[in-house]
Image (cartoon, rainbow, N blue to C red; front, side, top):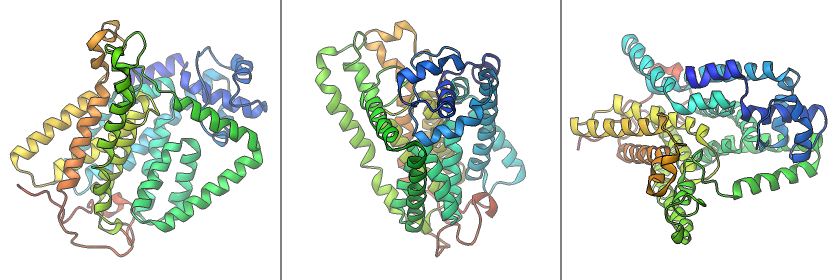
Length: 425
């Protein structure tokens, strides 16, 4: 985080992903077409060279970068790093209660230090800071929306999630999860907030730019990405059968599509019954985080939507699994099996391997550059097992949901997990 992330971002200030956002802000100021390569080329003098950059977010999100576009790039890039650090602190604050709830002061300090070390060593975090991605912003919006929904503050949660959806469509996953849980009032507020935001965006930009963005977005994500920056089922099978000039088995290219679909189905179908098993009022804090993390994990593994930076969001699932391992009554064998699996998942997801080494991009060795995909599969197995084993009855059901008469998880002291234990065997 410090060397390849923070220091690189502050000293060099050449984050190429941030360049697209910065130029989009200039596009608003100069009334340029946001999704035109020609218009983007005319704005390039405002920022350092960054080949291949594109602004893929919805038009209204460009307004958020107008204040930064008023600054010279060298200053705006460093301010963006500080914004990301503030989002990192907020995300840690929102995630910590799920891991540290019900601990005494001494154990809380030890686990907080352990969690900080694990997060600081997470490769995607340094990568996010270095390239200037907005993943930390999304982490805050998702965790904030989850905490507000937990506290039954549906209007505030819906407004926050609508902002996130207009920023990055992946935020819709939280709305889908709450829909599965029957949070109809939240869904109504969210749809209303989305309609208000869409009306404001159309009034400001017009309809043509939105049609252009939809086509632009569909074209970009419709073409499979097989480079090492993508660690999902689509890229995994594509690297074996479809990556031109590199794949070891091009003669079996027809297998890439069916195998990708089969992988996606295998990941998705066993997950859905687990998400429907508990009603909203029966959820403990750790199960809430584990369920949403599993949905997020399956989406990242199945869809060819984002690069390595999005794997930062899998820290939610790692934290949820740790909360189960720490608090539940497990047999010694269960605990050590799960602990070893968790450590394997963390190492595969967090450690920076030599993805771009030329030796790994020839023949069967291409399998070695999918380590984050393998780590995601291990984490999927862990979360699914823990959720499937979580059969204990609710000791204190709540009428309106877990946050009906209390605040977010951290405000209640204990993590709300009383009565939930894994079976000993």
